[in-house]
Image (cartoon, rainbow over all chains, first blue to last red; front, side):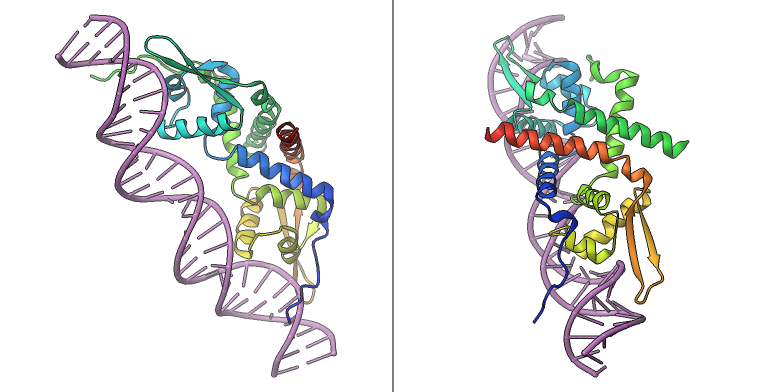
Length: 121
Length: 121
DNA sequence: GAAAGTACTTTCCAAAAGGAAACTACCCTG
DNA sequence: CAGGGTAGTTTCCTTTTGGAAAGTACTTTC
């Protein structure tokens, strides 16, 4: 009979479980190569069209942009509005909820900048 | 002749470029399914062996754990110390540098918790 | 009526990521 | 000398991710 003798200690508290779940949630929502880039751009730019984003986000292709925008919209972090112009245009904007990510993005940027400095000297 | 007429505006400032690079650096260092989980565990647990981590981090396999630990060590976020015990044991610990990630991890957790609450109500 | 702009979608493919299971190798205890 | 513990590595496989290129569809401008 196989018996596991030791068990998890550190991560076994309710507080830890909630934190682990929360980080997993966050990273799942922000998964993929371009989410932060798109969100950062929309936080700065307020309201941009599809082609604007394609130009702002260097390297992204239309397929990925389209897919990432859909993901972000489904999580209510950005909004998509079709304007009745000629030709019709679409405006993507950060939502109130999406703006709450600003501190998260700031921390990531801050850490990355500090990391660079500590590595190069 | 194909000509691109409009150019990037929002992300074209030096400040933005540095931020974009910094976030990309950070996410590349913390890439993969398990990095935050491992770091979080080591921040809490201070010093754990390979088998301890395998038990703490539910779902991870030894291959992934081994690989992720190597990644983190190569970026000086954790340390690996072979203890001259019988049988020899290995202790993984968070480094001083690794601890600087605590605010980043906290922000991610905080946001994830708030997200859950805003979704369910 | 051709060119260029809007906003995408589709197809096809390559590379990266991740996991289960087995295997190595060494040590201690009963 | 079997069983269980230490710390991994290796193999084989599936899934996921991401990108290039082309296509769709409709409109305005020259």
